[in-house]
Length: 233
Ligand SMILES: [Zn+2]
Ligand SMILES: [Zn+2]
Image 1 (cartoon, rainbow, N blue to C red):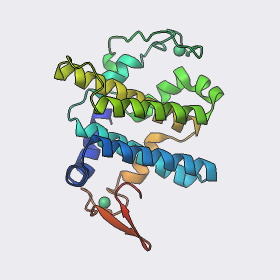
Image 2: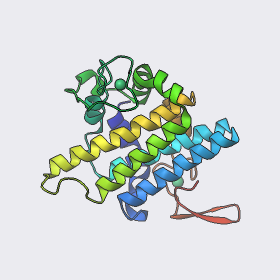
Image 3: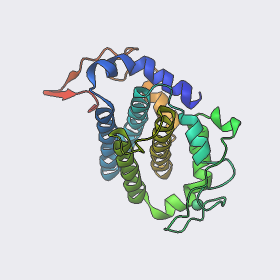
């Protein structure tokens, strides 16, 4: 399943609920950050099952953000920043970047990469960056993911060139979101979690909370004695 089809799958599952119950892209981003915090908690506790659920949740919330922008060229942005041939910063394979990176040299997207699904992206990014990311450790990967999510927040509130055309703004957002996906994948790879397998395990039968597709959960759910807003499950 390509990234585009996966986005459509999550749109069918959660699109209606997200449009009605979430106020905008920044709130969608907040839920994505919640999923990443849950990833960190599961790592601290050494809870592998919860870690897998949280990473699957991060994928779902990531596509919830993408869905807000409709027709975002995510696969094209991934292919232009994460070339088939080498690291787009140091131009080596595998990446041999020093801590101060050179300027990125984006490439013309390879058509084959546009059809890739999560599993292929996980494999490719592991080939290029896996060794370096494992050497630098999980905390750094989660910090980088946090920085990339902040970049998206900035882009959402309009910190792009104000003379940009809608197409340029769309491309800018797609590139920033491509970095977020790449770092979610890096975190999963470091944790040795197969992101595609766990995403399907959690979401293939519909929403894991209400068991329906499309999701029929109300905006607030009872969890034990607590009431929780969507996204905290
Ligand atoms: Zn590099
Ligand atoms: Zn539901």
